[in-house]
Length: 54
Image 1 (cartoon, rainbow, N blue to C red):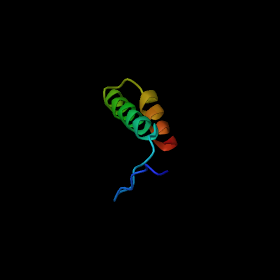
Image 2 (tube, rainbow, N blue to C red; image 1 turned 45 degrees about the vertical axis):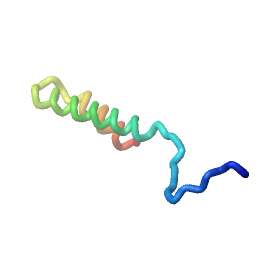
Image 3 (cartoon, rainbow, N blue to C red; image 1 turned 30 degrees about the horizontal axis):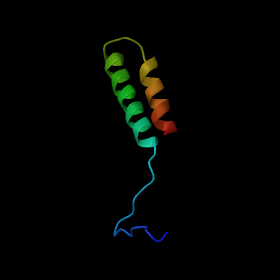
Image 4 (cartoon, rainbow, N blue to C red; image 1 turned 30 degrees about the vertical axis):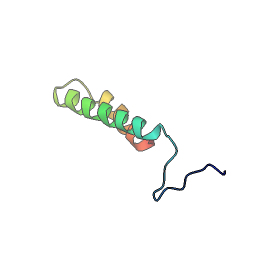
C-alpha cells in the first residue's frame, strides 16, 4: 500500500442500496397516485414493502 492516498474524508464502497431505495420510493409514490385515482392499492403496497425492506 505504498501508493495508497490518505484522504481527509471517508470514501464509501459502491453500493446498490441507495438506488434500490430510491426505486422503491418512486414505486410507492406512483402507487399512491394510482391509489388516489381508484386503481387499487397493490402498487402502493409493493412500494411500501420495498421501502421497508431497504
